[in-house]
Image 1 (tube, helix red, strand yellow):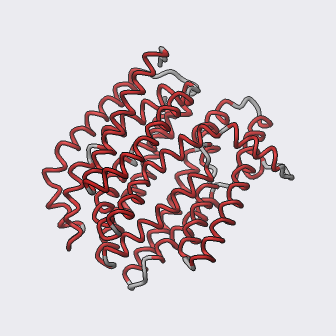
Image 2 (cartoon, one colour):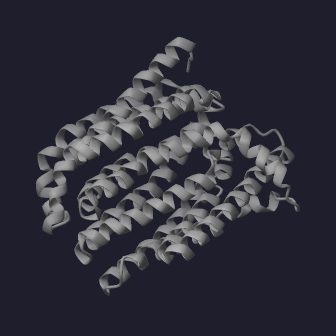
Image 3 (cartoon, helix red, strand yellow):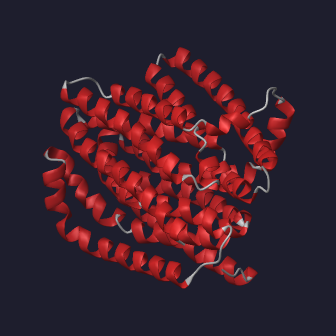
Length: 394
């Protein structure tokens, strides 16, 4: 339990800084560039996230357990080779497609965003999580954060265009990748297209789950931009980014809980801690709207402060996301039962995508926000139903 507590502490130290620096950067960017450029910055950042998700291909769900359960160095090496060579295949295909699009559209920022996504997706966090080497992840991520935000803030201060933010992010992901190279010693020479393809097929459902998670998180950006334009996207994203930074606090806990619960039972201390965190998240959702207008005026200034209206509703995603994330880790991923949850999630995303298109078209941004909240609530209810139906115990 002492190791578990230490790992949670390490991951939250890193994540606190990952949360702090975006909060410092957002108001600088909002003041330095017009809303349309801020919307473009969000758009390209989303491209990076989507590409990263495709390269990662759901291995964050399956490979962590595989590494944690490995009985020997040989078995560990087999998993690493399968994952890394499959990722290389995906990178080659994505960069080829991105090159064609870039040459056709002359949108070179798109290519930079795609390269950033590939570098991010190739980072082997799964290996270090599975071996519970969280200090290694923390150091590498902190160095990447320092590179990204120091360059970005400097660029904004001297008046450079928003696409330099995308370039600085690309540099930071390469720094993180180079900081996590211990697993590369396990790689064997040679490459088999058929083996990599077959391995990707076996992980396809988990990719669908992982990609649907990112698509669900990103689709609001694409849909709002498509129907309402980049200026309206800027107002929506100004609130959405703050909420997702807060929701990001859940991630370090997930990363540490998964390998721990793969080997151990859920203790009373863990149950109590998770319950307390849920109560705190509900309290934040109730109290934050009382001060949101003043906070956004101070934080963003100008017309961007009007996004506090969106924030007042979006903040309810915090307790909902916390609940669905803990259900996923405690009842499904740690028990090697990710498949039932993935099926539920994927079906909900398909339905939600169609509803989102209609919601934004006829009701604007508020339609999207309501759809996101209903999605999370539905996911929790269906997951609980699945747990009771299949009698999954902790």
